[in-house]
Image 1 (spheres, rainbow, N blue to C red):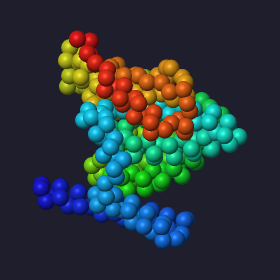
Image 2: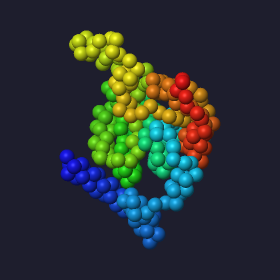
Image 3: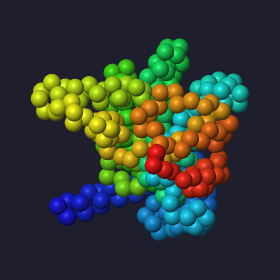
Image 4: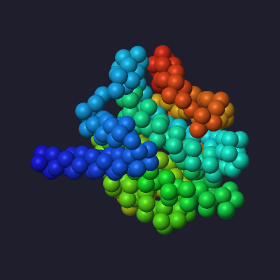
Length: 296
């Protein structure tokens, strides 16, 4: 078993090195010049632990040793940002994808273990069909970029879907491939909620419990909070400590309805693509000064 774990870790490290090397080649091709080669090689070295950035160390020292384990984000305002800045909503979604990749790095630097983001809700299927199709096409182009980023930074990616049947088959295939590819990564775990609804997540969990009762595998009196939680899509990870919602809205919008019971809530009056690292640092500092009693 030890040998198997070693070779699995070695395989993951080799994959991350390969993706970092490919990213380096793309960077050199795009930027050109000797400085691009140096920057690309430094990026590979960072992935392998050869270089440590003073920035990450400074952040750890200034914030202390207790960041939130699990951060959840409602990435709101992409459409409005795109219309304001570029004249079309799709550009806003593209900018939102770029911001997510930045945010992953910021959370990794802080020592956050789990990051769960709301990418596309079950209610979003009600939007104009052309907009939905454009978003699915964009998502297909973003998955490889997210995969490159995840492998370079030892990030495991999972997709949480409470209604997978509505997703196009090519999207389902793409996300399954990325989940498999990043499964050996041992750093931050990114959960992307795609075609997800908090209520349907609970409904599916309750349905599975009812089926167990029907098969006489479970009695109703054994059903409790912990058992329901274990059947949710996030059942194998801790509940979020922090929820961040952008764009000035102050509601949950059917996101992780069960899991957010004791999360600390933070609302930013800026669109998701406008979020800066300082915003996250300020939120973490506020979180560290809050006394969480969990009803006691």
